Length: 592
Ligand code: OXD
Ligand code: MN
Image 1 (tube, rainbow, N blue to C red):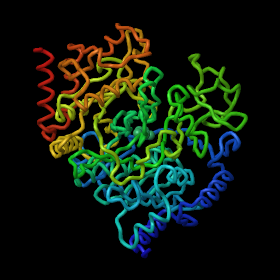
Image 2: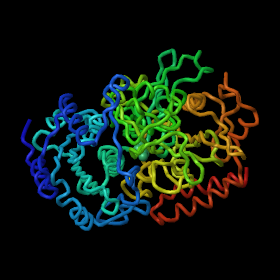
Image 3: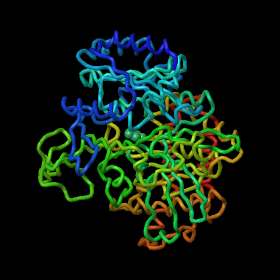
Image 4: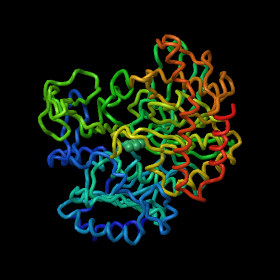
């Protein structure tokens, strides 16, 4: 290993600014993990859970004002405002560095600065990106160990002069008024200060693997996407993979780890989980799109996770798991709303306050014990369905791309785009109701193109153009679909059971990708013919099935009016093809 002069000089500079008492270079070893864990337990950053029930598991509580990504404090700092586009907060780089410096100055006094070398993707693969995160949080170090390939081997790989993303994080004093998540794509640098929440501080994840990587991917001709990757194996050994983009907390983790429902079990499918949040996709020499998951762990939403919604996750998270903001039970175990067992009689809530299940707020609603955005961090290899191709440098070939959102109305259960270009438009008009993963009014509808609204590191108009170009370069582009598991009837009841039953839709999607299953052509795209969905063993009325697949023309026309508004903000920068597709949809809605 050579001496990386630039890396050492940068660490020194950042230490001069943050003034830690010590600098510690992480090697990624098990003994280091144990040592840091003991230290964090003694200073209260982590709580040791019952080791006979949950071996290797710990609990962390974030500050009360620091429980989700803060999109309003997240900035893309390019020289030109236009390059960040209308959907990103922008700050000129000089101003961002200046404001950042003011908060970072002296922020690590009395603390240790941990140097965390990490790789997104297999170490040394030409598809991977390397980063070094400096942080004053052991919680961050322990999470990065699970979520990325981290330690000495990455440092060895960097050798004396390889490129890496410079990532700086300090909790500082966790003051929301002094919190900034700053991206400098032109300098390959990320600065995050004033937060301890995963999405803001595990800088390999949203910051590097999505915002910075999407910026680089456009220049280098690939795609960095907010997508799960899963494989479906048939008894004959054929495995087909799909990548699916849903906004945060809309079920990517559950879908990626799906267990086939009873009614389909005789078909002998086996599911392979490649990733649950991020896909890096490249065109390989065969002219197809291949995907890798750059992460090695899951940072999943706990509430609602149980043996019915995600049995694989329940198996995975009973060891070596970091829990964040869930309930601590008297026996040193954990619980969350929508979990497996009945609630404990008492416990400590996510803030560490006494809690019991009979507690009510002023409006008479139950007081939640776990934060709605509470999380588990777990190595993906602990998932029973973890893919055997996780470490392959070229990843897996993608047959279908699926977009989706959480919409009570309008979007049918599933439809297929007519072409790649139409599919890009379908991705671009994706909308979803807000969840607990973002600050904002829960339930409010927002456009979230390709589920990338908070994660696209550059002008989204250029992003659409990049997607269009990628399609033209492929010999065999994946087929594109849209799904909506969340459609409701007039009484607000979900029409579709979801979870494992979603395999029935995935089955149709993969068959369509091979040109096999039957479909009905509608103005918005192809939808399944009733007879082409295998509903064996599923109790669902014809009436509900019809409602799930209904295309309401006037509602769609109303939606295009809203799309016009959304697209208008991009001005001339929006590719003409997007308007062409929107106009073509309007024409089909009114003429056929
Ligand atoms: C996540 C998110 O944590 O999208 O994956 O918020
Ligand atoms: Mn996500």
